[in-house]
Amino acid sequence: MTNSSSERPGEFELIAKLFAPLSAKTPGAYGLTDDAATIRLPTGEELVVTADLLSAGVHFRTDDPPKRIAQKALRVNLSDLAAKGAKPFGYTLSLALPSDWTMPCLESFSSGLREDQERYSVGLVGGDTTSTNGPLTIAITAFGSVPEGTMIRRNGAKPGDVVFVSGTIGDAGGGLAALNGEMSSLADQHHAALVGRYQLPVPRVQLGVSLRGVATAALDVSDGLMADLGHIAETSGVKVSVDASRVPLSDALNAAAVPLLAAVTAGDDYEIAFTVPSSKRGDIVRIAAQSGVTVTEIGRVEAGSGTVLLDSSGREIPLSKAGYRHF
Image (cartoon, rainbow, N blue to C red; front, side, top):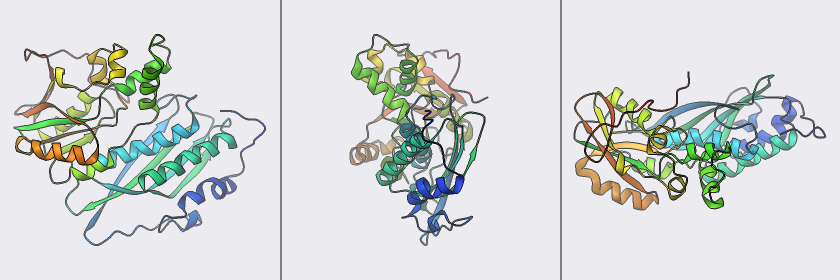
C-alpha cells in the first residue's frame, strides 16, 4: 500500500479532494461542509439502517486492492439492506487510516466507491477520518427505505415454510483459501472466480426488494449459511432443516474440491437466505427470473429449535462449528 512519494494530505483537504465529490448528488449531504446531514423520506416510507465495521486482517487482507476493499465495505452493507427488502440510497463512511495509506491508495479507494455509487444508486452522506497506529478500519452505516411495515425481519419463519438461498455457497471461503496459497493447482479461471467472490461480493438488491410481502424471514449470509439460518431459527422459534445435497455450489468450488461442511460454514458469501410459505414457490421462481439471480430451495422450517444439516437418508450431519465467530 505504501507510496512514500505521495504523502497523505490533512483531514480537510483529504475530505475536499476525495470524499466531498462523492456526496455531490446526495440530497441533504451539503457537500460534506456541515457536521450533519438531513434525510427526507417520501410519505409512507420507513428508514432502514444498518452498520458494519471492517478491519484489515479480519474482514479483508492487508494486500487486497484498495479499490476492492472500498467496494466490499460498501457492498456488505448494501447486502444487509437487500436482505431486509430495502432500497438503498445513502451511507456514511468513517476511516481509521494507518500511515502507509497514502494518496495513491486513497484515490483508488475513492474510485471504487464512486463506481459502486453509480452501480447501486447510492451517495455519500457524511462520515469521519482519523489516523491510527493499528490496521485500516472502515465503518459504514447504510440507509435504505421500504414502504411502512414491509421490512423483512428474521423472526417470521413458520413451520411449513420452505428455505431458499440465492446464488452459490462457500465461494468466498474458497477465495480466501486461494489467496492464502491453499489451492495452487486450481485452474486460473476458477482461482479468479473464487477470489472475486471473496473480494467483491454482489449484494442482491433487486431480489431483496422483490421479496417484500413474500418472504416470511430473511438475512444475508455473512457468517456462514448454517450459522445465519440459526439466527432465523432462534428469533422465529422454529427448527430449520437443510438438505445437504441441495446446497448450491459453484463449478469453481467443486473444481477446488472444497468439502461441503466447509462451504456451509464459511463466511462472506453475502447471498440472501430466506423462508417462504410452500404455497409461494411459484412466486419465487418468477421473482428469481425477474431479478436475474438463481435461487435454490434447500430445506424446510419445522416445529422445534436450532438448525440441522441432513444427508440424503435424512440423518443429521454433525458440524464442529456453524460458522464464523467474531469473538
